[in-house]
Image (cartoon, rainbow, N blue to C red; front, top):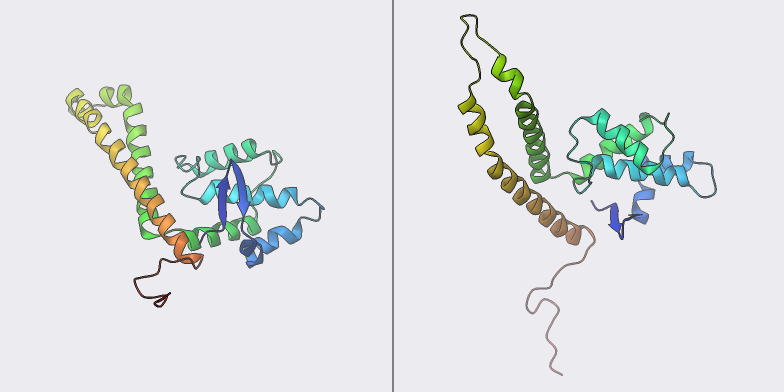
Length: 188
């Protein structure tokens, strides 16, 4: 479901999105004339949930949340309430495919590997009950050798997700390519 589009670094919320109950609630509760808070909350939902978001690599939800709040200019005391939580769940349910879900899982795995490699000094100091090393230098070197493959695979997976989304966006908007003779024959 294509509810949000980024065009020239500006979030475009489709008109259909405002008609869906979770998003309609966000719009209605913003009593201001300009609807700035509603728009910022929709921007938050996009950056927090969308696979195309620049914040998707932040697998720690608390850190991702605080960074987005700060970067889009929501009040420092703004929190995810029930309305926003329901809208996030709805958007994720309607926009994530099995391919995108696998991609998000692979990002989490890559983040865990990164955390592991950040602790090499602790790992090399860790000992078994008999005094032997738990993690050896060759184990860490081997893990580092696999990093370029992981990066290539993540890039390829991301491209696949984007390709799938473009394909799905075309289907969801009702646009389609006609097969030969599907639109009839013209003899003129």
